[in-house]
Image (tube, rainbow, N blue to C red):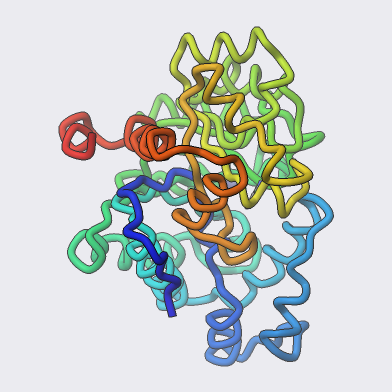
Length: 326
Ligand code: ES4
Ligand code: ZN
């Protein structure tokens, strides 16, 4: 059942959320059964014990393996409904949701199945959960530039349901420059652009995301703090950073939440937001991340309200809707 914070959670927007990363063990086993898929784990408990990661790649291996259970439109609709029910309990009023088309099409699941299934849940979300949504289609950066281009062309019939393109998966060795062409096409088609950069990869990848991909937001971006000139650029241009504290701990981007650069990022004047990334894997949804940073970093109420307000400022909502949240 959805986790319910003990307090009344602040209204917030979730801007960094991989829908495939919301697949909880219980739903994974239910879908495996429904689809006749055998998981390499006997029980939910055995699966949960695999949720100990050395780095991004060790997480991604499990993340891609568990996706095997997602096969039908109903599966994608059920996955999104389960997320939205939890998000509502966590104070989420608006969610900009990533999906990884290539992780599904490579397994023979048609793009239309993914988008139609997710859309069914997202279309019901304002009325059912009081949550507005956007979809962000991510390219897997450890796949080729040609595969990203083919994915974008295949998505053309669905672009009215897609707000932005993104870039995710294994970062190091796959710099943003590799995806310059497909991001240019996305911008020409009127889409917003975001990219994971500066999670495991260096500050140089954040520069590339800005200069070569023209991103409107940077996902993670925590390693920007290693480059003073980059921080100045991000501040001057009010480029939002979607920071994911519990993810950073679980994937060992930071040693301990108490050492997280979030306070320094806020002090530098960066437009920082707090997000959950892959909550089924990293131990918490949106408000759980707020509570965790409050406790570990001793943040006061005003700072928490600033972070919640930033989430709406950094969203792709139209200005009129945004203003209603501020
Ligand atoms: C991801 Cl935490 C993270 N980083 C990069 N790619 C991802 N895909 C899903 N979660
Ligand atoms: Zn992510």
